[in-house]
Amino acid sequence: MLQITPHHRLFLVIEPVDFRKGIDGLRAMCQREWKQDPFGGSLFIFRNKRSTAVKLLIYDGNGFWLCHKRFSSGKLKWWPSTVLEATKIRSVELVVMLQQ
Image (cartoon, rainbow, N blue to C red; front, side, top):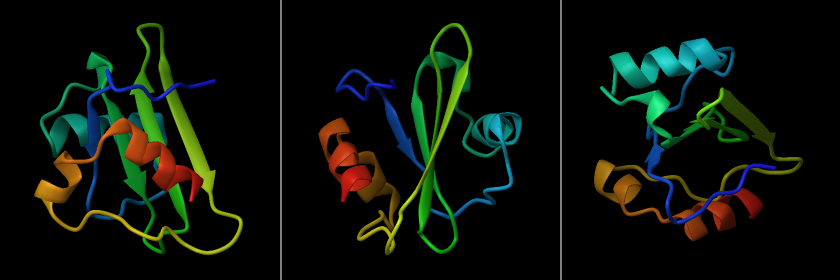
């Protein structure tokens, strides 16, 4: 099981992404659009256009994990709308957001 800890560096992507993208597509976006190293152990968090699902991408030193969570009822209650809001998210807040 993937553990989200305070030691993880979190990158919440504000704009929705195409959820047809898999590991390679999301990894390329991290490198090309946000100039971030996806091999550095950072956790990248994406949402779909309707806010009914999230994807988490992380490299654990041995390979990539791509976790997809679709909410069984409803949508995300909150998602950051500015870079400032996104950079203030802590791991415990992310876990609460994912559990809603």
